[in-house]
Length: 61
Image (cartoon, rainbow, N blue to C red):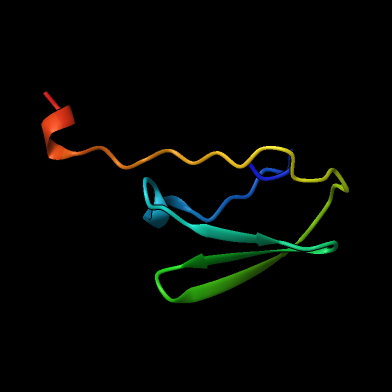
């Protein structure tokens, strides 16, 4: 979810980290060297930048 807009990339990308660039009219998603451009359906500004860090091997029991 980006700016309260749900972005679906498909099952092959589950659990992978992506980079999202937000502009006034589009969301640009970079993943595995591919670029997906998605039209924005909301005009809500980005207020929080939060990302989950990948788990380390030592964190998994």
